[in-house]
Image (tube, rainbow, N blue to C red):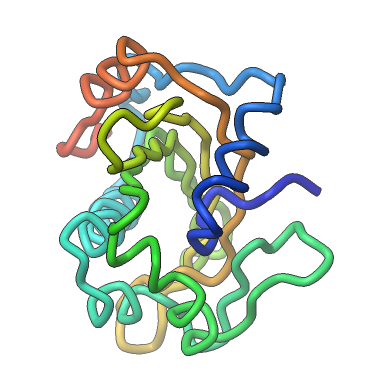
Amino acid sequence: MRTPVRIVCLAAASWWAVAAAQTPSVPAPAPAPPAVLDADECAVWARELSFARSVAEHDAEAFAEHLHPQAAFGAGSPQPTRGRDQIARRWVGLIEGKQTLLRWYPTRVTIGGARDVAWSTGPALYQRVQPGAQPRYALGAFQSVWHRGGDGVWRVLFDDGQTPRPASEAEAMAFQNGRREACPKR
């Protein structure tokens, strides 16, 4: 399975070498999500944005609050990271943002027959912070499964994604321009 999009910040040089060697194309961010989400799906949309904001604001406590206690990250990998505490420890580097900044946002959220389980997906942008770093940007995508607990709060239960590929400045701008705060309601 390919590397999850939400991974621990590995040594920057080795990660970028792997990312640069990847040839599969990650689709560009969708220009606008379909306007078909119900109130529960919009709640997950908002929660996904809040989750991404916890990383953008380097808030490890808020990040951990978004995780289900028995979450599995890298869910499709042979050895996913399991449990809130373990995931929070593995994500410290990305949350700190000292080598790589990670941003993402949802473009789709779906809830099926089980109204306490939701799926979300969207693009993810990695940006190396070292001056002159090349490639500076990489684009990937994420897929998350959310569970609404008895307290009514949505928390990430499973997370995985596509391996990021090097991206141009224009693709990074397109990513930023594709972000929508408002949920596309029914």
